[in-house]
Image (cartoon, rainbow, N blue to C red):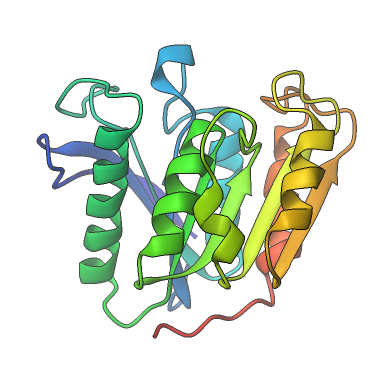
Amino acid sequence: MTAGFLREIPGPAGPLEALLDTPDGDARAVAVFGHPHPLHGGTMHTKALYQAAKAMPRIGVAALRFNFRGVGRSAGTIDAGPGEQDDFRAAITFAAERFPDLPIWAGGMSFGSWIAMTIGALDTRVSLLLGIAPPVDRYDFESLKTCTLPKFIIHGETDELISLKDVRRFYAQIPEPKELVTIEDANHLFEGKTSLVGEAVEDLLADFHTVRT
């Protein structure tokens, strides 16, 4: 695996600070990641998101994570929704241009999972969705209820912000293909369990192949 290197990617409000990790050999896909809510301390370095991104090169997938506008060295001002959606679209565009022949996967954690999964569900360049601790009771995930892309969800059993019961109810409403992994005794940030998030990503996606349409 090639160590992540800092770079700037073009964003609608100015350059976005980003990290790109690539596998040792040829990549088979590229995953774009959105981070938790910046007003609650979320960045591209949030530990569980970091573990998910670092897992990707181990299974032959490049991983692009970036700071939303107003976070770290990213230009702009925090917008708590629409602006971050635009940022994610810009990151998908960068991934498509940097890896023109590869499938694109959209993933994220908490607020970032809402951004990634809902934008990814509507973007024809995206072929797989990954949500870590998705806040299904706080944001509109309606677009996923008609989305036929493969959908993968990782959630903490004892998440104190978004109950596993709510996630299971949401999961029952979205169409196949889909898979839900629960991490035992894990809270919203997966404190003390973040390595298990990376392991779950590997277990779910190591043998999964999508074709770019």
